[in-house]
Length: 73
Image 1 (cartoon, rainbow, N blue to C red):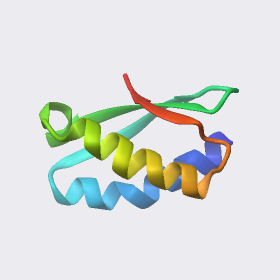
Image 2 (tube, rainbow, N blue to C red):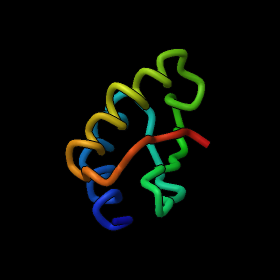
Image 3 (tube, rainbow, N blue to C red):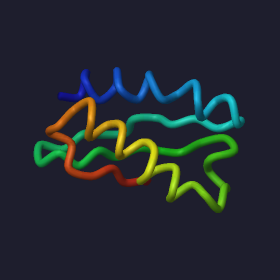
Image 4 (tube, rainbow, N blue to C red):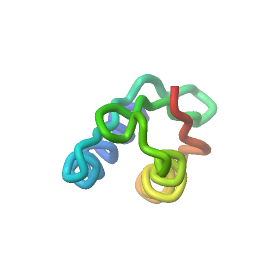
């Protein structure tokens, strides 16, 4: 599952990089919790939680149905 998640993150990465940010995969647990680290402009952005939940999490759940939640660490 981790490879599928990494591929999906690689798909959304250009959108984040266009705004000066990025996302790094930290871990994928057995129960479908994906841990990511927002870096660059995303790290201090007040909209980062919306980006995380409405953007990254929504896309990952669509591409990898086993994903239950995405959290920032």
